[in-house]
Image 1: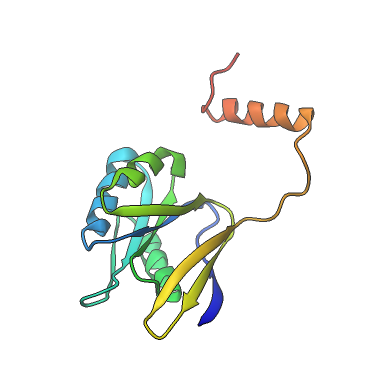
Image 2: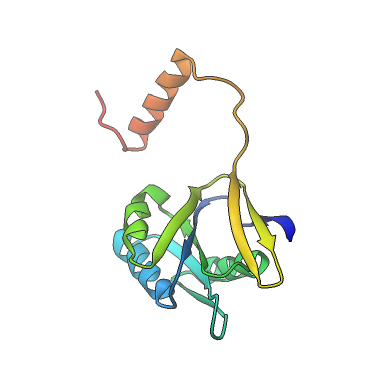
Length: 162
């Protein structure tokens, strides 16, 4: 078995959702979820088939993001995995809907951080073992950090202002 890490490359002003799924209709179902959850968001997505023609299926409403999703999935090359690259929305806006798609097995990460995907390769193929999402902690939150967190969430509209 060979192990490697693959860095996901995506634009700085975007977020990603990486996960595992199991059926060819995943690409269309995920398209509908993103388009229906955040109509003005730009996105591209790609899905690696694990049997049959074993193609990377792709959809999206932004050609650059669609191409970037395909490029990343070519590097990862793990069957039944998908990647959504999202601009103009946060993963929190689509995450529950993505998890409710009946063929989605799991979501591995939803982030704007740098991501490395840990991939194993055997004679049969490739699979995702996990992800490295961002960086390790520098310390423990202090009261001033908690105040900044609370202010940020209110400033971007995710919590009510007092």
